[in-house]
Image (cartoon, rainbow, N blue to C red; front, top):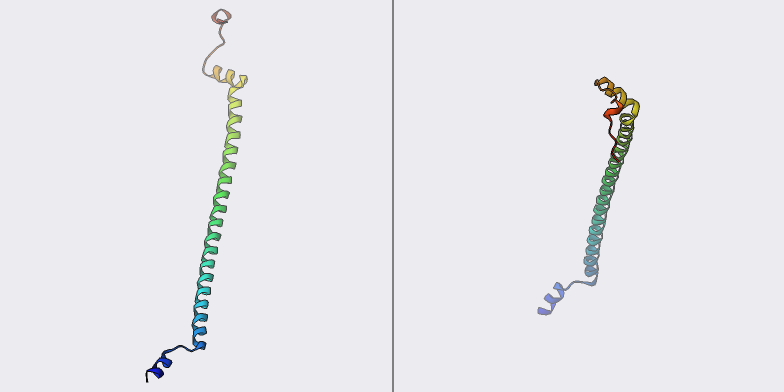
Length: 104
C-alpha cells in the first residue's frame, strides 16, 4: 500500500517538462516586459534631451542676437558724432584751448 501511494505522488516525466516549460514562458514574458519598459524609458529620456537641446539652442540664438544689438548700440553711443550731438543737447560747449591741460 505504501508503494502505490508513493507512485501516485511522484510526478510523471511529462508533467515535469510542462512545469519547466511554464517557468520558461513566465521568465521569457518577464524579460520581454522588462525590456519593453526599459526601451520606453530610454525613448522618453531621449525625447526629453532633444527638447532640452532645442530650448538651449533657441536661448543661444536669442543671446547671440541680443549681443549683436548691444555691440551695435555701444558703437553708436561711442561715435564722436553722437557724443557731440548729445553734449550740445545738454548745453555743453567745447573748452577753450587755455582750459585744456595735457598730462605727460
